[in-house]
Length: 319
Image 1 (cartoon, one colour):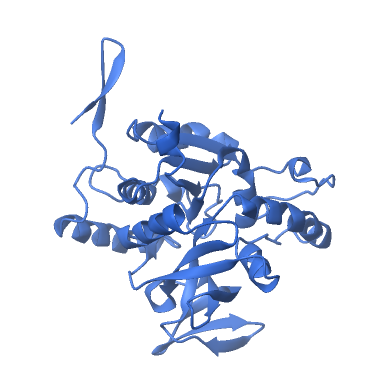
Image 2 (cartoon, one colour):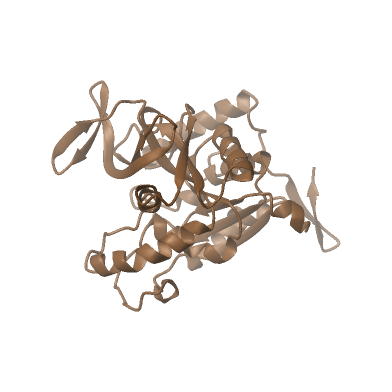
């Protein structure tokens, strides 16, 4: 491995430990492409084209073989692959309390779980969201040329391009200033279309969101400085929420804190791309159709990864 080259290629951290409660199955390894490709495959393909050099999957440990056989082992040798486990052991984050929970502590906790595999600027995405090539290219350019401990980023999607036709979604709603810097990000967990508009519901009150409102789809660009901030905030969060089995330490809590404390700027990299994903089982047919159209229009090959063959006990890529 050329270490000089590798240090300039950002890392892609993929959050794939979710329980898929609304979707009802392991959607991270559901097939959507013509040769069994998953949404995660398209994200990795776009990331490699944009210049990322390493992929870190954050998973539940018992999911390792499924993730390796369905995704990780199929990737080209040019990309480094690693796995990190999100679990219930909080001692590694300086928390001695034992908390009885059915699921881990959310996306911020998932990012913390990848710390030992990250040593340079990196991007965080969800495994089950399709973001598009434009988002990866913009983030890769930022991480390679602009990122430092005082300058980080997120890709801001228009909320109107991120909804499901089959139920509510959760989004980090962004407030952005005239310099396209993030001022605040607030997690809204109940956003949906109503009549001709978009609203979010909170304590039985509906609030309108303009369709151009920038939202976080968990497409963040960080430096390893974020782990220091997370380690400072997480123990207090656990202490305050250890009796709430549904409390989650969200990624947006970290940049929101950093911005308000004056620790860093977060550039909001705009995209008008249409996000799509599988929040609900009914979304699957629409996602498959969208991918087919992208292939038809030449954005992706029909088969993303070359087939690996075994000859004389050595594995090579069959192009």
